[in-house]
Length: 107
Image (cartoon, rainbow, N blue to C red; front, side, top):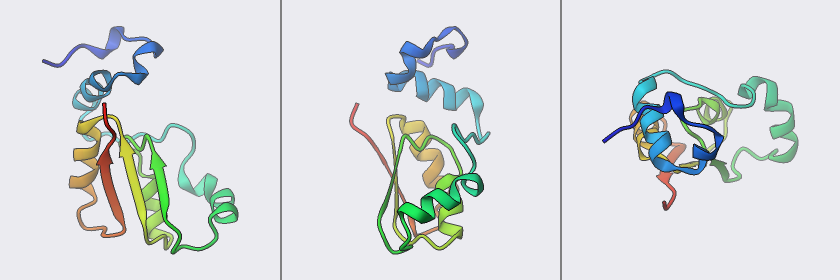
């Protein structure tokens, strides 16, 4: 059973059921929490200069950051998230991008 996320508060952010419900309600809409990759690219390139280096995106949700990183040449990107719904959305959306892997973190 999915619950209404409109009444949730920030304490729910650690709850996988909250995120599952939110991603079901939002459907295919995409959201980057901080900045788009284009804004963060100079910093990421500074700290991860080799595109062959493995990259771990924690709490990836349904953001497009890792997709943009793959387009920029990064070859080994692992997305993890507490929400099985977000991970399944990412796997479906990015099945054509072999550089991206997605796993659900343990609940």
